[in-house]
Image (cartoon, rainbow, N blue to C red; front, side):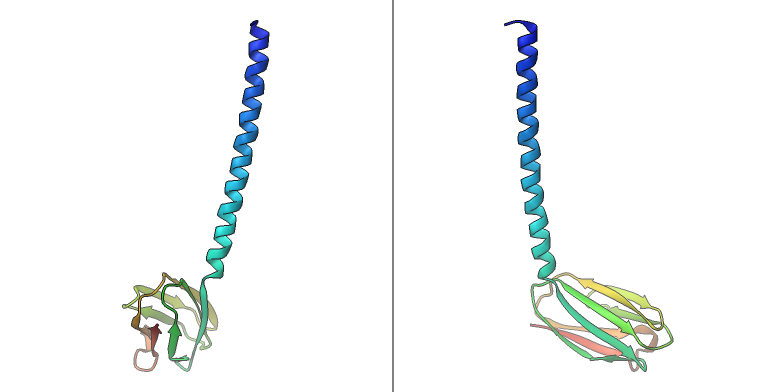
Length: 129
């Protein structure tokens, strides 16, 4: 076999391997994308507002085992800190604005939350069932 024949065969094998690799990546990417779409569809979304330094609703019933996305709307002019020691988060929400809190899947139970700047009135809880 001459060097030029060897080189042509090597190029062909390289091209076939490149095509195979690109195809595998494309299929793998589609699988990753599809699983990402399913994961985001499984997120349970809920909305809560703060008005007159109180939560509305003051109680949230959430599913167990699903990621949670809570949209918190602060309808007051002053800021409020949405906080839960039970769930391990705190977020200051400016007046007349909103924020999103993302939680990992919950276990069954009751989890307290407060508006730290007005703990006497801004009280609430989550029931995960």
